Each structure stands twice: as C-alpha cells, then as structure tokens.
View 1 (cartoon, rainbow, N blue to C red):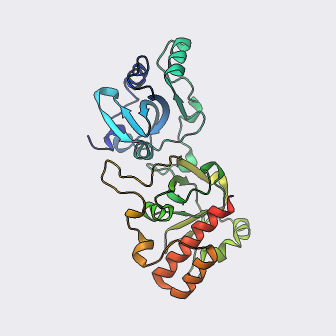
View 2: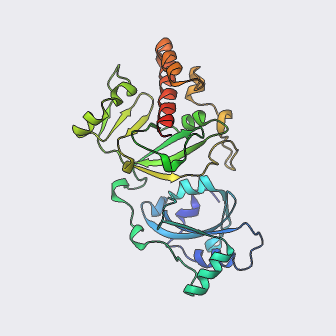
View 3: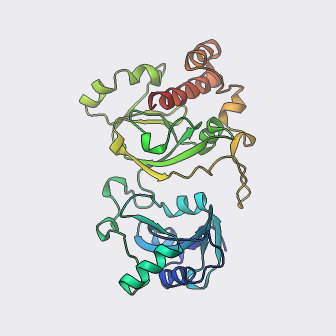
Amino acid sequence: MRAREFITEIKGCGDCFQVAGRAMITPEVPEIKLVHAYVTGQGPTAGKRFSHAWNEIGDVVLDYSNGRQVVMRKPQYYELGQITMEPGEYAVYDDTQAKKRMVQTRHWGPWDLDPAKEKIDENFTDGRVKGVRAYHGNQGGIDTEQLHAPMWFTASRRDAEQYAGDDGYVVVVNLDIKNPYRLRAGEEANTVLRRWQELQAQGYDGIHDRSVGDWIPFTREQIRVISKDDTFVGENFADGRVKGRSRPGRVKRSGASCKGSVTDLRARAKKYGGERGRMYHWCANMKSGRKKSK
C-alpha cells in the first residue's frame, strides 16, 4: 500500500476506533499507545477533516483500520494527515488510561476531541493544503513551544534538514500569510526585517524572499505547528529518503556552510555573493531566528 492511501481510502473512519481500542485491552507490547486525533483527507477526500484513531509504538504508527496494515514512521504519517498535536485536536493514551475511558464512556471513542475543532480553520484552507507549508531547521536550541515571530521559515524541507544537521530536527508548520512583502532585487531579508512593524502598519503580514524560498510571518498566531516530533532528522525512513547531513541541500551544493556565528555568516555572504552568498544569508537568518527565541 502506498503511503498516501492511508487517508485517501478512509470515509469517516470506519472501524478505526474499535480496532485501535481493542489493541489496548490486552497489549502485546507494554509501550503501545492509543491516539485519537483529527486528520485531513487527501485525494478524493482532500480538504475534509474527520476524527481518526491508531496505535503507536515509539515513533512507529500502526493503523490497522478497515482491513489495512499501515506501518509508517510517525513524522511521515503526521505530515500526510496534517495532524496537529493541539488540545482538543489530539489525545494520546496508555493502556491504563484507555481502558479507564472505555469503562467510563462505554464506547470506543473519540473521548476528548473537541467537535468544534473538526472544521478546518478557514484561515489555512486553499482546498488541499492549509496555508503555506514551511519548515524551520532547529539545531536543538529551542523547543517548538518557544517559536516566535518574526522568525525565518523555508519552503524547502531539504534546506531545513541541512541546517538542522544530525543532532537537530525540523519543525513543520503551516503559515497563514496572505499579503507578504516580497523582496525586491538587491534587498536583504535581514535589512527589511528591521522595518517589520512599519510594514505591518502598511498592511503586510510577512516577508517573502523568492530567491531562496524564505517566509517570515509577523505574528505567532500565523504559525500553526504540524509536527513537533524530533525524528524528522538523523535517520533513514522506510520511503528511502535520508535525513540529516547525509542528504545534500542547496547550502552544501553552493559551497556554503551553516557553521559559525551570525556575524561570520553575514561577512561570508558579502564576500562571496551569488548563490553561495544567498545561502550564507539564509544560514545567518535561520541561526538568528533560533538565538532570538532563547
């Protein structure tokens, strides 16, 4: 079964809550968890949001609903389903908690999902993917709860992975940016960002650097975290993609490197110019955003 079929074929949910719940009654693995969450459909169900249930062991998802046998890494599953780990939209239970809720409610669930949050946030809806899908490479300096704005994000997951390295991780987000200020030729994002409050007063809600694919939202409310999992980087997934430094990105191909201080990276950007200079600027932007959040 192809990865994307795990949601495409679901209509409502079928027997997902019963199947996932039964796995918790006499668990074969003590570490198994039960997850209830809202997921967003793909393919024929694109744009539709509905409650779903599955099991997890560590960072592996087990979805045996409706006769399927989907085994997938958690980051990939969560990104495909656009699953947000927010209260009212996501709940996880160990075997004791799950059995207690079964006895209390006398049904398989969902138990703690907020029906009001089943509707897709209209601010993020474009018919399939909500908002601008973007990535932030985190070298381990902050937790996603400390994400702030303005902060740099990139449209390239590969570039974010390159910046994060083997010991970091990638934060996947949807950005609600409707009217960005688009950088003109010769302008630098860092310089323009110093005027962000002025731009906001003029009606802009972010900055977009089309030359490198960077996005900078002006408010925290524009950032919707899709995944907080730290297993996006530093491992090989079942789909054959390699995470971390072993996967070359634009930074590496340009001859640049994200090593060094923000000041050093800015100096190298001015020294080299061109694609290599832009990549040094990108590294400095990402690192600057990380440090400001501490």
